[in-house]
Image (cartoon, rainbow, N blue to C red; front, side, top):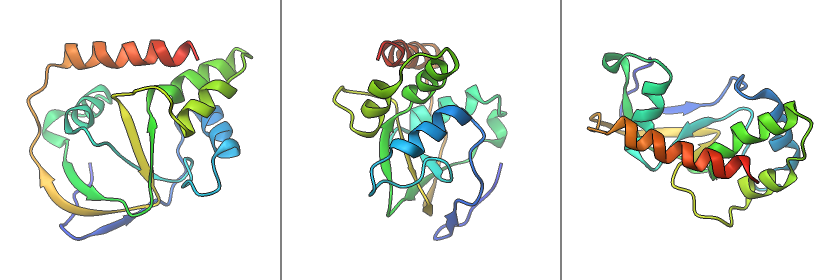
Length: 149
């Protein structure tokens, strides 16, 4: 895990390797004013969800570093939809409805990814105390809803 200093600005330089087909489709359908989803940095408005995400990546609790950041150019989108689009593309199913919901959400989504080309570190955050089971169950509910799009 990287460590950052307060006031440091980080720039996205590497293309995402997660969900390559979904990211390619999202890049092809993104609004003109939206940042790239292929080369970007990610954040979330929910510290609890950030921590859960890090744990689900199998990162050790001791290595997880959480920061409050500012992202001058960013987009908010439902995180679970990316996985749903990837699965639809892999199985030859249409994904246009999911792509539209990703870029222009009409439903209420709790687990939202915020992404953009740069972020500036505001302050270091303490790891929250979370109930992994409850948060995971809530996320999987959104994932099921995303799959139905």
